[in-house]
Image 1 (cartoon, rainbow, N blue to C red):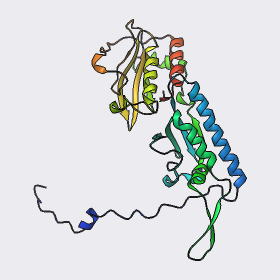
Image 2 (spheres, one colour; image 1 turned 180 degrees about the horizontal axis):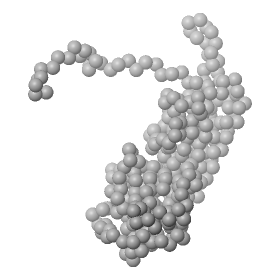
Image 3 (cartoon, rainbow, N blue to C red; image 1 turned 30 degrees about the horizontal axis):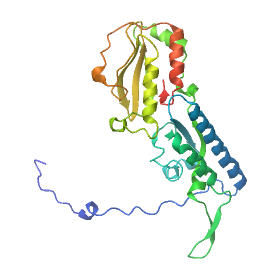
Image 4 (cartoon, one colour; image 1 turned 120 degrees about the horizontal axis):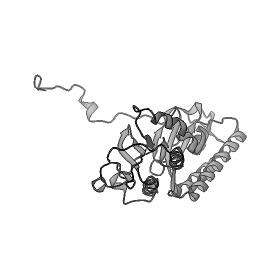
Length: 291
């Protein structure tokens, strides 16, 4: 600092020694005394994951999807998040959250069967341990049981959840000259340039299929102006009356911007059927979070 160049640090130990992190919380059994209810819940989650596996295997967009994990009301604390055994960050990266206790994870197909197996491995009955100090018994659930019990549900995001307006409503808004003539498309995550060459989890395949989808909407379809809201990528999508070939001009890695021609102003296409077809197709893509 120009007016106070000499600084004296009295608590210098705080800058040389890491604070004691303390002991992690003991795994909690959210089905204490209700083993049969837990078994039903555990098997139901495993069946939900099996349905997701089938859905991804049949998908033409790529070998991955995004799952929505809803936590139980009693498990909203960050320490209860199922990221130590079930949704490990190196396999299932957390890509965002919605309401309180709602988490989104990228779910590559290659790891989904292991996820199902770990859910099924959660014990039906909790082992009883004894304290060393007084030999008193206490329940000692494993992390698998704790994390499975903390989850309310696992699902993909349905297409109906991604759009809360009708095509007719959009057409009415586009009739207003003051309205921006396009749609905001929120994605779950961006494709970082250094990850383009590696596609072990299917993320690149998802991006390529999304690019192909945008380009399939025909002449005058334009995907423009990318940005980020927090970590969430945002695209602007237009269906215009321009006769030029469709373009994808963004800065999140879908295509190279240096070879994409700039878009000129044009009029919005008022064909409601075309809009409905495009919006329905975008809603079905796993990478699209909301329109």
